[in-house]
Image (cartoon, rainbow, N blue to C red):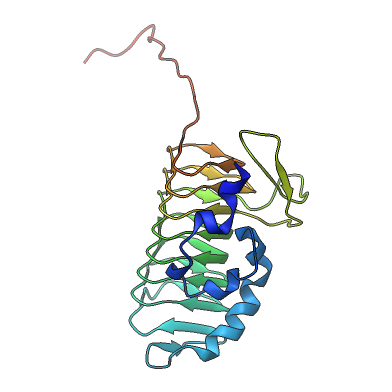
Length: 231
């Protein structure tokens, strides 16, 4: 279902300050190389009654809550109502929407994060787009570089369709209302269609169709002890 990976089928573009970044593009990963330059263009034009500049190429809405131990690098835009918790590390080239949570020990790099997104506990989100109201459970991460360092290819999980992205770094594209379970790994080139759920401890790759539930079928075995202490 490569069609489910198209921008028009994944995102409500009215739910991001970066709407214009997606103009003229078919697939969301096409924005990844342009995030930094887009921020540099948009930042100086933002309403000064709402946003203030808090460092080189960093624009943050005045009501954003930022913990003293968080680290913020530009280029960066953080929209209204968002909370950045202790130990968060925002490495730059990031657009973070309204009413989001960037949690403790979460690392953000080269991302577009739509409104109402939560990455609240020990997440790594690199070279990714996270749609409106998506959520990554504790410890879930985007793996953004293949182990053999070759360019990322997006593959449909249900057909032979493939798309060459030309990108070495490509994390995950999460559609609107995607739920990712705790301690899941989204491998390079993962695209999760809107309104889909990923079970905890999943290893995900390829295109997951919209309105789907993804789970790894993992067996387990319980072995009786030969001896044990009496209780």
